[in-house]
Image (cartoon, rainbow, N blue to C red; front, side, top):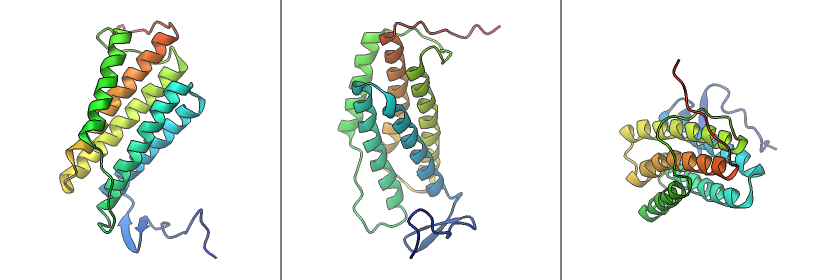
Length: 180
């Protein structure tokens, strides 16, 4: 009986999707890995977050699975791939605007670390930017729907806004770099 936790098929630097073999450093596999890492990190944050933040992050995780399914579709176009819609992107943009009105952020960079939840969200933001860069590289080889790229671009802004909101809720003052 084959183990469900490992197959041993990837020991020589290739992943098998169905019966097809892909090098582990292929843009598709790297993008899927970056999206998986981001999704897992959001799960870590969600596991200790308060209900409102947890629900928001759960919805993002669901959207990341849609993006992963669309990327995986490139390997086997035999299944119907769910889509990220313009409406989902617009809804995220509206939420970002709402948070900006509540927080009224200052311009400029912030040194992360004054609030634990905000720090985790800042880390997720940087991981989301890496996933976005992977998706952009993949898009150069395999044309993807624009909404996927737009969603991931907005996601880093969304995570930044959530971090600032968590800091504001905690009544914590964030520091800016002094550049000296």
